[in-house]
Image (cartoon, rainbow, N blue to C red; front, side, top):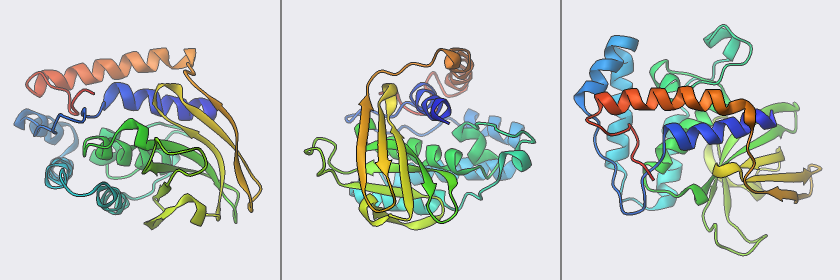
Length: 241
């Protein structure tokens, strides 16, 4: 699972790099929607148009409102196990696949939230994926973290959880129904936790983790991004950081 989480973060930075603070999201070319319609059908095209309009409509609202609205709208994506959705035991879907096929597992939905929020202007410093366990069932689960004050003192950061099982965005301290295992940011930032269900603390932190096994996967993602740049008037679907 640890390797898989790092794959998510590397792919997020390669495929859907978010906008810089001074850069606004640019509408996608009609060629993009024509391609989506051809490859995935009319309903998939409508979903992609909805996502584009959602990003355009919410550029200037407060960050916390961006977070809550993104969590709510993304949670309309149905949870579908990989075995049923992709006929594979463990398949990682790109955000494009998750949106166009209308569904995914918790990891896929968390990453959709990440890329939407990055394109609403939030920084990578504000976001991280977190591997957790649901205390009651011991089920492995993935959520997105929003850190409202990433430059704040250690132990005083406001960390919120975006969960596809729960529509309300709550502080991590209020989600003691989850056991924290690991949080991952971009560029290989890794935080390991000790969590006994009552007390939660940081066990270790690492920077710049690289996984050799994902290099081939990243190359394929780069090729996919190049294809969309070609049909999107030379721009990737998401602006470069």
